[in-house]
Structure formats: C-alpha cells, structure tokens
Image (cartoon, rainbow, N blue to C red):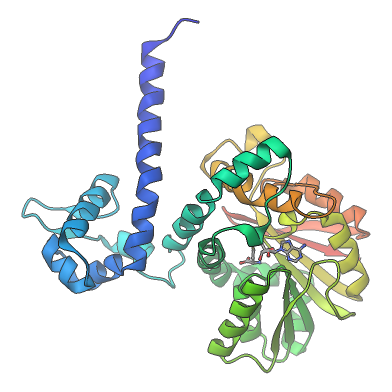
Length: 351
Ligand SMILES: C[S@@+](CC[C@H](N)C(=O)[O-])C[C@H]1O[C@@H](n2cnc3c(N)ncnc32)[C@H](O)[C@@H]1O
C-alpha cells in the first residue's frame, strides 16, 4: 500500500492532539482536586508562585501544570508571565454548579482508564467487568458529570415533556429512580416536587451509602429513601412514575428490567428512560459525542452489562429503535421520544 504523505500528516496531527488531550486529562483532575482552577478564578492573573501559594501546592509542579494548561487552551498566558482563566474557562473549569462544568467528566474518564488491564483481558475472555469493579473516581465523576445536565433539564424540560407526569408529581406521587447511583436525579426531583415520595434503587452498595449522605445534606430524608436493590427485584408496587437515568443500557437484562417495571407500575403510571444521545446507525454516530460515548461504553457500559445475567450489552449508543424494542418486549404498548439534548435522549413508555 502506498502512503499519501499529506493524509499521513493530517492523521498524525490529529493523533498528537488526541495524545496531548489524553495526558492532559489527569491534569484537569489534579487542577480540580487541588483547587487550582478555583484559586485562579478568584485571584485573576497569577504567576506560578502566586498560584502555588494560594493553593498550598509546590511551585515547580504548578509551573509545569500551568504551561501544559496554556498549551492545551485551558488557561491563558500573557507576555508578563501571568496565567489567567477567561470567563468561559472559569465557568467550565471552576464553577461546580455551572451547566458546563467539565472536571467531573474528566474525573470519570481518568478513573475508567484505570480499568484498561481488566478490560483488555475481558476482550479475550468475553467476561464482563461490573460497574462496582471500577475505581471509585468513576462513581463520583459520573455524578458530577451528569448532575449539571439533570439540573438544567430534568425539572424544566424533561418531566414537563411527559404526558401528565408533572401534574401528578405536584399533587403527590410515588416515584422510583432505578439505577440511581449517587442519587443526584432523585434529590433534584424531591426538591422540586414536595408532595411526592421517592425511592432510589441501585445494586451498588457504596453508591447507595453516598446517596443517603447526599439526601441528608440536602435535607430531604423525610421523603427520600435509598435502598440497595437490582432493577429486577426492588420492593414496592403501584409506582406512579419510574425513572432510569443513564443506566438501562448498563444492565445485563434491560428487557427483564422493563418487564419488572411494567409489573411494579400503577396501571396509569409512566416510565421515563434517559439515555445517552445516539442515532440508530453507527455511521450516524461517528462524531465527537458518539466518540465520547462509544469509548466510555467500551470501557464501562458494555463490560458492565456483560457482567450481569443475559448480558445483552446494548452499549451507550443503543439509540431509539433498540430502546423501543427492549421496552416493547418488556410489555409496554406505548413508547415515544419525549425530549432530547445534545447529550441525552428522553423516552416515555406507558403500559
Ligand atoms: C452510569 S451510572 C448512572 C447513575 C445515575 N443514574 C446517574 O445518572 O448519575 C449506572 C448505574 O446503574 C447501576 N446499575 C447497573 N446495573 C444495575 C442493575 N441491574 N440494577 C440496578 N442498578 C444497576 C450502577 O450501579 C450505576 O450506579
């Protein structure tokens, strides 16, 4: 095969960018952990010594970190030797509550990469690697990655897009949040709908412990419970509303889970499934969002599903057509796309 030098150069340039980004991901995590971005956001332009003092960190390390961040376009460097964050960089890197907050996503990515030896072995054996087998940074990073999207959309857009659900939640409904992780979605709903009661279920004990603490911190424990349970054996019946946030595709038996939901939902109840944004065909997902989700799916979601019974392994880019099939096989007769964002699809299913 002959090599087209121009095409090779283009590919190498892209790969060097990717390689730099891969190394830099850990630097974003360090900047977040040590409060370097937050200190920069508060202080304005700083030298490496000033930032090191503000953050209580070693100047030599901070100097190298700043240069890497400037080369990455994550901070700015001026001719006087000072580094600063623009308003946009600060919004995305230093403000935990902002809808564009990024460090949680980097924390999840860096944690997921630590499982590479296990995943490489799983490619050979076809065995799964469970969610609980990952570095704990994945659990916290996922919560911090997803929470801004839920805070921006769940109450104002996703729930209102469902048929009659918002009114029921305002009046007082029984809600289950299945695969709730650290409970960010459960707590947001509890804060918005004060007459309703909520139970978050997840098979991962450490996540449920963290969710209980979060409910306590948010002052919602009277109406919110968190319990360790799988999507096919959680307690309770006649729920008015059941939600799955970014977890149905992680389950080994999503059809079994949908069927269990069908049996635990009130006859006029509704199921909401939030999934990563995806089109139905691979060629329609070959873009930056698809790249992010296919990669995360290879390291986390697909092995998680393969570690459970059935091991359907939908993957994080399952898309609407496959979700419809799963939910319909689970016994639901009505299924529709109710809302979407660049990162999520929101489906509603009814018995
Ligand atoms: C990507 S995380 C999403 C967590 C949370 N819903 C959120 O949006 O932040 C997937 C979650 O599904 C949970 N999970 C996976 N399989 C499960 C199952 N069969 N039953 C219950 N939970 C499950 C995992 O423990 C994990 O907390």
